Length: 379
Image 1: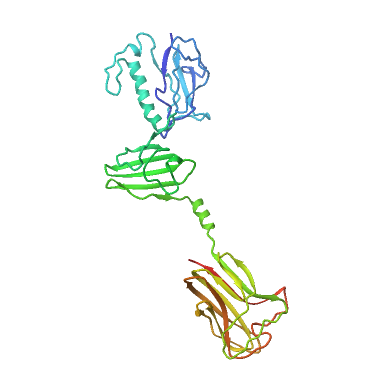
Image 2 (image 1 turned 45 degrees about the horizontal axis):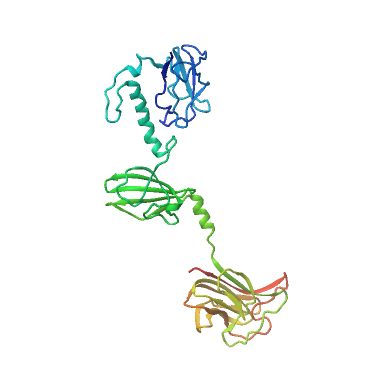
């Protein structure tokens, strides 16, 4: 007859009181490092393999020995576990005079009448609640029928198809997931929810027995991805011609004249286009930056003009162009359109100039670029 060894009656725990799954137990003759055989049964007929391995919850099977032994326990990788070795290991007699023969006064939680049964019940009582929540053992958390219920106890739960209540944006009952609840008082609590297959955390608070709105806790990578996905809608057009081509004539007399705009460089604004030197824009709010070079026209300025509604949207800087070089009038600012409108880049100057009034050719490169307008849609 072999006696039962009691070296970890519930489970092996590490220094942080966390179960050690797959822990390994080695048995030696007491006071030595000489391995001995231990058994799976009290009769001592079915030997255990060496080492004896704990399950995923850190719980060892029953171990019996016919002699006093030393036991050493490591984790699954062979690292030492606090509290071991034990020499000698406690032995519980398995015969008629052992634990099963010792009476025990039953209680509500441990309704056993002998010590052996009481020990087994204690172990079951420890493991069962953990199994309910799936902590270190096989089992699932309880399901929540209504995540809006205000009387849910603290703990881990899960939701699945059929659950009712208010879910975070992008989450439905059919998605399934985990819910963790921490109660502060009978009327105040916190709820954290994670959808199956995602790492996004949703949180809300209950105050005065009423659940508040959900908030989403975003991780840094999600925020970075969202920011990188944001692009500004833009149209960029130029007065661009082959190198050496004259820029055009201006009649003089301070008459507002539409500058040529010939080429779309970029256009990501839905509904925007360029035709006949005019930019068509949909309703919205815009930032604009426009450059207007002029040559030998004396004093000059520029503007952004709403041709459709016959209104000046923005006026440019004043400048002066003589015989020596171009001058640039700049328009910078913001405007809003209530509806679709055609926009023109216009100039007014004091002197007449034929051929190159809108800028002097450089004669180099592939193109001469005499003016440009950049518009960004911000709302």
